[in-house]
Image (cartoon, rainbow, N blue to C red; front, side):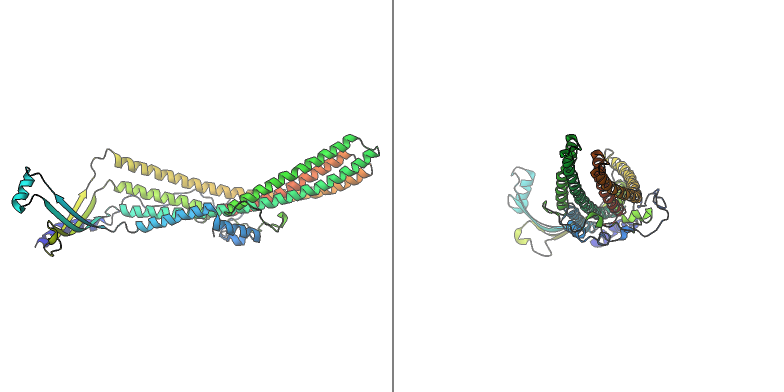
Length: 473
């Protein structure tokens, strides 16, 4: 009869629980409106296919670069740190899946009380049990459970899931950046190699001019000033060599660190102009960035988490239903502790708590959560805008650098012919040494510029690949 009475009183509570369990306060996540264009700037027609879908091994075909990228993915410390964050989030996610289950603990306690002989408790104990102290022995299972009436726990699980996915997307974003940085560093290294070769070739050319100028001075055809100016031009070219060698060593060190290695030389078998620019550089459609680019996805997941936190803050303002239970063995004598069923005991408690006055803490938390959600919306929109801008920049650079490359190549060829003619005219006395020096300086600058433009073309292709979200596959 006692059990039936308990069930009678608890039944309305469970009915209320079942009716309310379908409630879920707070708004469900809905992607905010975004001002995404139909196509990127400088793109004539929109194509759904994108180079972002290409694996990095297929995009970067240079075996040396592939080896560096593969090593970077395995050993780069920034990427390893990001993956550790993912592993930590996995553990938090596992714990969040069990939030709706009750908490259970087991406790064993032994207690002895020695009240004053002149106290009421002391006199009572002496009268009833004939001794001046009382002992209490307990072994019990303790259970506590909060009903997810308003969906607060489910919102917590949403937050945890969003945080996990955010760390996962963030790790992919780190990988895309690592891959891009390694490729940029490698192409920059090839450019420095090419510029060093240009400087050495021009040094031989200036040295030849200097020797001929000295012969002309000895013959009385030119003055010592001419020799000195040619020598200054040679020294200027010589100065480039240690500067470029310094930059090469620094770039090699940077690449080594990116791949998780100690600074060391980097082996390369190809020259700068053997590094081909991919012919197919389709960007796809702008809306695809929302799913392809990891950092944009991470920002959206941050918004999902902020939305769920606003729901949690709202649920905290509503009543909460908690049920606790305890059962086990209890005795005031140790030798009767395990006397079953006499020593068995059990209690069940259900409580409903409604916050009334919390010094506006709950209201403040809700308002802050709403503001943070609005902030996350702005940050998400900003990330989308920034991503589209980066793609547009890369597309413009890719297109305009083609024209620059054609002009720079033609200029270099023209100046190479010009320096041949200047040297022939100088030897025949029909051109001054100043014209030869000018031609040599121009061809040096043109060849250095051509190498730089080709490197910029390669870099623009890498920037386009990264800005579209490529590199994590």
